[in-house]
Structure formats: C-alpha cells, structure tokens
Image 1 (tube, rainbow, N blue to C red):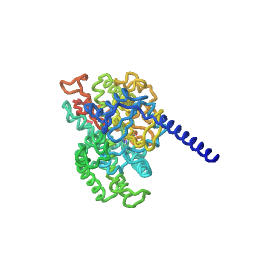
Image 2: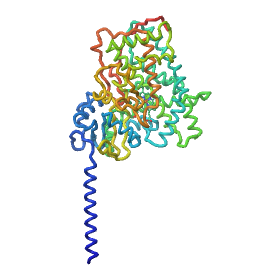
Image 3: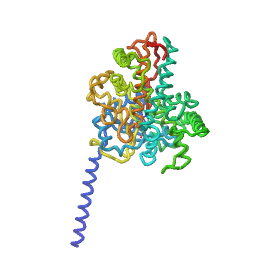
Image 4: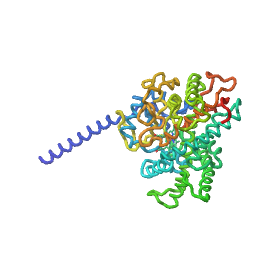
Length: 497
Ligand code: HEM
C-alpha cells in the first residue's frame, strides 16, 4: 500500500513537472507579431490590396505598423513568412544564425526557370551548392579571370561609345544600351561569346524577375495541387521556360560543336559533366541552370544599378556635375580611360555605393528558408518560414542614415561603411555564406561604364522632361529596375574614340 501511495505521488509530481514545462515552453515560444489575418488566405489580402506598390515598399510599411524590433510574421496562405527590416535583426540572422538561414526558399518559378534549382542562386544549402559555388570561384570569378574581364569590359564599353557618337544629339534608350552592354560583358566573360538569341533572352529576364518576386498560388497553397494548373502563373512560367530553354539548348550545342575546347565556364562544366570528375555529378540541367542564373544574376543586377545611378544623377544635377568634374579632372588630356584609372574616382565610387543603398537591385535579397525553429531577438522563427530581408528598407532606416530619403553620395566619402556584408544597414550584395560571389565584378561593371559615359559625353533629358519631373517609378519583381526605360540625349565632348 505504502508503495502504491509513493507511486501515485511520484506520478502526480511528474505530471505537474510536465505541465509546468509545457506552460513555460508555450510562453517561451513567441512568434514575431504581424497584421490581423483572415481564415485560409491569412495576410494575402494585405499584400494584394497594395499591389500598385512594389512589395519592398508595402512590407516596410507593414513592419512599421505591425512589427516589433523591425521584424514581422505574415501568414501567406499555408506558408509563414518572416520579414526583417532592421539592421540589428539582420545582424543577428547573419552573424549568429547564418547556417540556419543558409538555404533558399524554393518556388514554382525558381524550380521551373532554374532547372530544379540546379544553379547556385536557388540551390539548397549543402554539398551540391558548396561544390558549384567553388567551381564559380575557381573557374569564373578568380582573380586572374576578373582581371582579364576588364579587357572585355573595355572593348565592349568602347563599342558602346562609338555607337553613342553616331547618335550624337539624338534621343537614345539608355536602359536598352546598358542592358546590351552588360549582357555582352557577361556573355563574353562566362560563355566565351555573345550567344544567338541574347536579345530575346533579355526580354524574358523582366518576366523571370516578376515571377520570382511574387507569391504564386502553387507556392502559397502547396497542398491544393488540383488547382495549381488553374490558378496562378504556372502556364505563363512554363511559356517563359520554353522560350528560354530553346536559347539555352542552342548555347550548349554551339559549345559542344566547337572544334577547339575553350576555357569559359560552360566549356569547363561540359568537360566536368563528360568526365564525371566531380564528387556530385554535373548534369545537363546543372549547365542550363548556370546559364540562366549567370545571365540574370550577372547582367540584370549591374545594368539595373548603372541605370539607377544615371537616373539619380539626371535628377540631381549637382551630383552629375561633381562626378563629371572628377572624371574629367582625373583624366585631363587623355583620349581614353584605362580600367586601372577607375581606382582614382572616389566620388564616382560613392555615387555607385549611394545608388546601391537607395536602389539595391535585389531589395529583399534572394528569399531564404529557416532550416530549424530558432529564437531570434526574443522571437521564435518557425521551421520552413520564408525569410525576406528588406535591405532596401534598411538602407533607408533613419536610425542609421541621415536624411535617408535623399540621394547624397557624400555620405560615403568619409565613411568606412562597405558592402562586404559586415555593415548590416548596407547589404546590397547580402551577407554570410550566401553573399554574392560576383560583388567585385558587379561593382566594376557599373563603375567603369559610368566613368566613360561621363568623360566622353554631356547628357540631357528629353525635351519637356526636367530633373523634377523625371519618372522614377520602380517595377515589381525580385530585381527592381526602373519601370519605364530611361531616355537621354548624349553630346560628345571629344572626337570619336
Ligand atoms: C551590382 C551587381 C550585383 C548585385 C547588386 C548583386 C546582388 C546579389 C545579391 C543580393 C545576392 C543574394 C545574396 C543573399 O541572398 O544573401 C546575390 C547572389 C548571387 N550573385 Fe550577385 N549581384 C551582382 C552581380 C553579380 C555578378 C556580376 C555575378 C556573377 C557573374 C553574380 C552572381 C551571383 C551568384 C552566383 C549568387 C548566388 C550566391 C549563393 O547563393 O551562394 N552577381 N547577388
């Protein structure tokens, strides 16, 4: 009997302990706050109600209103999304929990358009990603290659200058010229030459960016499989993939049919696929995924930054005059600028950095996924949440930046803030393990064309457009470029170069 009573006491004690532990765990498990939700769709209506505005702007306002410490949780259909727009929280994610957030959130668009995420950008964190990222650093973005790319850049810029000389005094589509320039630099650097169908591919990039930046029905209601073909963008995404696929197959075919094997990234990958030399095999889809992502990640981002930089200079004639005076003073008496000369252009570099603060080409980076339930700044981030780090909002946070809504390159002149992922209020290339491996190349691709364009030409807005009325509307997508192309009138100040 005594034994029985002790057993009952012991059982009660265990039950009490368990209840206390569960109570504590429940209070400890506090998810970030967010706006009120509707059944089934959650917060979807708040995002679509403001669909006239780009997502990074809508999310900044929602975080301000409903978030805490610059962090907010949304329920979008069946998925959780955590939005961060505070440099302090971003620091916590990147410094202390980088591994937990090192994988990418995969969507219908990323899987369809990037060949089951076989490239680096959307690839899940793990050995495959590590291996391919290593191939990029050794075969594409190593110091020797990046140096040799400067001669490709130099030649391409000079053919753009010649082209602009022949359009002297006429209205030119600046956006289009810059996208052609950048895609030529990327194609020649990574694929050995400009491929057939480049312009058609460029046209698809806008669509690809829009699909990647949105919330597709299949992504937010993954369990409603029967409706995936009927609702959302599946058909449009498949159509884009078919167009891009034809061009890519042709690129691979041309590389295979070449008499001599070259040493561009595609040749290296084809050789590795054929020889099976890598631990995790490279497949035909790996090569296709790599082609789309290098073309998109390499040329779209740098073009977007360059066009925004020029747009801001046209909107701020004081900045344009100062940058132009610096370039012309630094190279007085020279007919041509050399790539090494760019180092001297402290003010123009600040213009590019300010552009990356004010208009980061990927304003919410590439969405990540939480690999393990984790506490961040006192809040629980649920497993598998989509993580959106709003670097656009962080670059305009008044706690970190003075007069953040104005374009003032001077703020970088005496500042030690860089974009290498250590200053969390300025993360245009991301940070941590998934930081952009092309940041040096990308920065040079924006700086050098701007220096040449300011050195060789004076620039005017089209008749009837003034600095005050210049349209600066942003498009919506994973990459945020100008919605409408920038048109300008170049007037050469030197004889044809
Ligand atoms: C101004 C130009 C550029 C900007 C602003 C930019 C920005 C970014 C950003 C924000 C990310 C995502 C980082 C994250 O999610 O944490 C990224 C990733 C990436 N970028 Fe860039 N990028 C630029 C140029 C380039 C160039 C020129 C290349 C290569 C030719 C490149 C290749 C990549 C790759 C492969 C990744 C994926 C890295 C990974 O997930 O491990 N980027 N870039």
